[in-house]
Length: 68
Image (cartoon, rainbow, N blue to C red):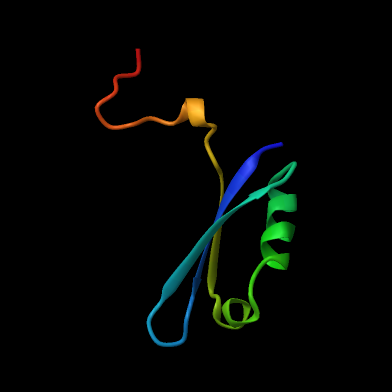
């Protein structure tokens, strides 16, 4: 099952960010799980949510490594 990284911007005075991961079959499922997992204080002041498919460990690129 794919993993998605969720970043939520929230706060009344200055923004803060909460980032976490969810496993879901697709982005729609990831949004549902992300919504269900938000604490009330974050939910009340959130104004932006980003959901991205998290790369598999073998797909990640690291500085100093060439993609051969």
